[in-house]
Image (cartoon, rainbow, N blue to C red; front, side, top):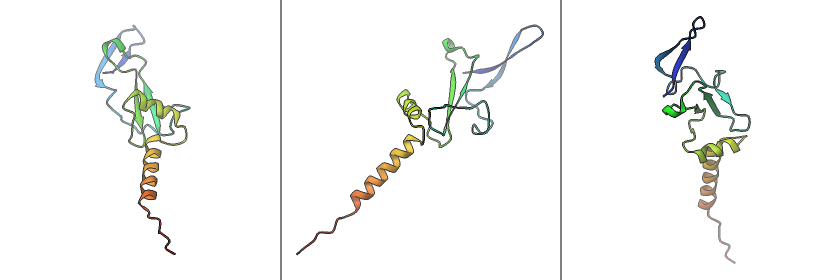
Length: 113
């Protein structure tokens, strides 16, 4: 879990808030500057980095959000998100599968002479 840390500028002490940030989304990632678009990734892929996280303690380094509701679950899926710069790879695969199903369902009329 990643917790928000505040630092007191006057004496340099840090205070830990009780709210976990890695599981909360308070604003739309498409409209928030904290959610960054990866320059070579899917246009719907957003990520938010936590620079103060402690990775050794199990805190995440970043959080991923998909504006189409299909976020990557594995590293392989995330790599596919990085390689599909123009569209969502899941939606493209679904469209391709539907088109293949429709073309296989169409019957070709037999010619009888």
